[in-house]
Image 1: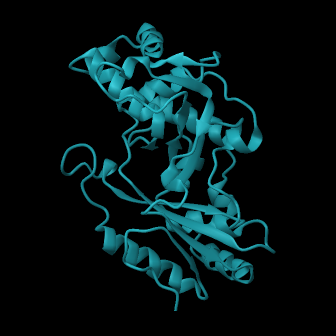
Image 2: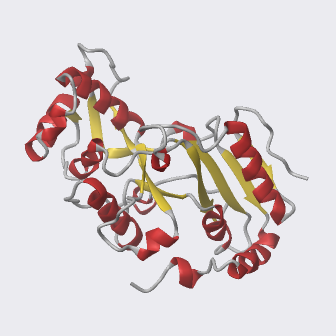
Length: 285
């Protein structure tokens, strides 16, 4: 039987039986003590550290945002808070390449995407631990400003000036401008995960049924990041060069379950019995 090894390291596990998938996920949660307090206040389970899942129908594919697969650039997004999340989700699912990577909180949804195409190839189901941000989190506005940038490179200081023109309140969230420069440099370096709002303003039935979340990728910096109070504002980054977090390339909490091609039809039938079908996940809206 294929099992999860209770260690903090990247693992690839080839399963032989469908039940092994759920046993691996259960062991993963137990080992990492998930879900548990992450960001926010105790009791705010919406932003707890927890397992996220992603399914890909070819196990040889890397985890990449659609902008790197399709090669086109997303256009402007104008919104704040939970509405920003919903507009980003709409663009991800209906329009063009974005710097977003889809994850789900529902292992069965991820399993569907691991099995619904490329029937002659082994699929993959990824498990990854993350403490997400609520879409009301103030720094989500950074994404809407980032996609507006058409320049080849820009300093953190000048980017903050641009953000402040549209969202002057962002400066008031920090004790000092230096703290904002340091925090923004960190975000731009590795990106972050946002879960869908608890009280959505747009009825996006697709993302609700898929229990989706969005990982917003970071960008490439010209030089190693200076995280000091004297140098953070001078960090230079390339807005159009999207970077996938290194933790999604053999990170210590990443598990890749390889699903044999011969098991795909069996798994899809099992999911159909649970109501997880194409019609359910992709409703006509």
